[in-house]
Length: 297
Image (cartoon, rainbow, N blue to C red; front, side, top):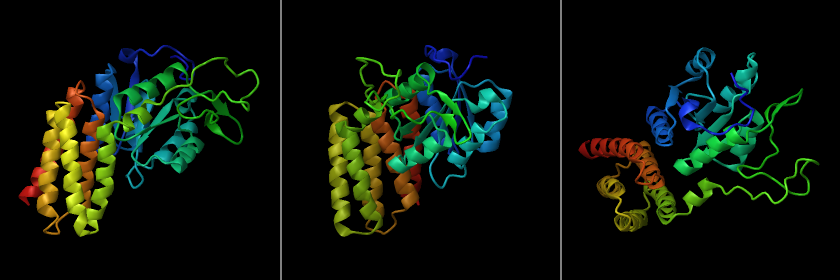
């Protein structure tokens, strides 16, 4: 078996990836996006015990850990235990943490636990591909000392640091900084309006009367963007969501779990371009079922 910390060319079809996620839908979505990137050897685990058993029994190159605070999985505890594993190769495996709650403090906590790279939800396929490249082609050196066990924490995520305080001998002249594809994806018009829509929908739950009008207006803007880009799947999803908030809000029947599920699905549709058909279909089907169930209630 190769050293997981030895740089090598990324060959998606030979890569062995383990997806760890307590949420069945999210777990399947990540697998769909990986398949769209030509990663075919994908396994999944819904809890720490399943993940640990798989890691012992099957060869793995990268762990994709999808985790939110409040999940049944304790993501950072899982990573800490992995870094203490008695098997040297397992404790050195690269870990990419995928989360909707990606904050500066989360990055600090994750780095301290031993996470290699971070990816924000909704998942951009280009950003996911970039993270795979980073952990396979330019993995962080592994640090094993009495105060820390895990990948080197000095590198800025995702671009390398080439400033004056970089260790002597490590500086690379005229090397261009890596552009974060996650940040680029988040600045598209549809992603920006979806971010505004989520903020406005928070006021629906607080029963602020002006929130419904603002929500409907932002949905119409998003539908217009979907029409311009001929994205019929996203347009249909937005129309269903419009029906839900239009019916449930005046009746005081807006439910936070349903609202959050629908927004998460719409955000993921907005993040997936139309050439990721299989992943988009999974999201659209789940969204349609969730909204139909609530409208029929």
